Image 1: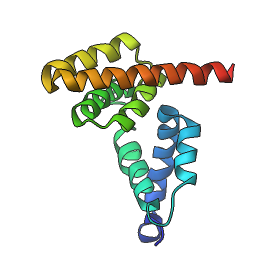
Image 2 (image 1 turned 90 degrees about the vertical axis):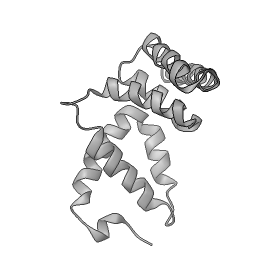
Image 3 (image 1 turned 90 degrees about the horizontal axis):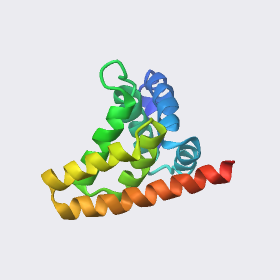
Image 4 (image 1 turned 120 degrees about the horizontal axis):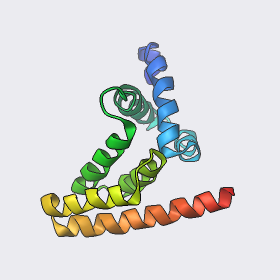
Amino acid sequence: MGSLFEKDPELKRLYEKGLEVRKKVMGKEYVEKSLSQATDFNRELQEMVTIFAWGLIWTRDDVIPRKIRSLINIGILSALNRQNELKLHVKGAIRNGCTEEEIKEVLLHVGVYCGLPAAMESFRIAQEAIKELREEEKKKE
């Protein structure tokens, strides 16, 4: 097992572009930890995520700014009940300039269109993420 770059070296440019955005949104420490823990089994998945999600989609700021992409992700991840990713993207949304008020509005919207249990769980996860992010920021001071 190897790397996607062995099959198509041109993907390396998109990977580097995506890696830069991924680190800005998700946090350098988180991304570097994820990549350092990649194995032969899941390395290509990490490359795919970085290339396709971050290199091709998150770099399209001229169409939808990152702040709005973050709010969209919060809604989608809440609807899909993907709590781990939701927590990461709530933190990313704040790094992208979203306010807690904006995040709250998205989660209220989730309650109407995806059901109150989805909103309640998402509020819990978001609150946890916000608390963790504040604690991380305090440690850096």
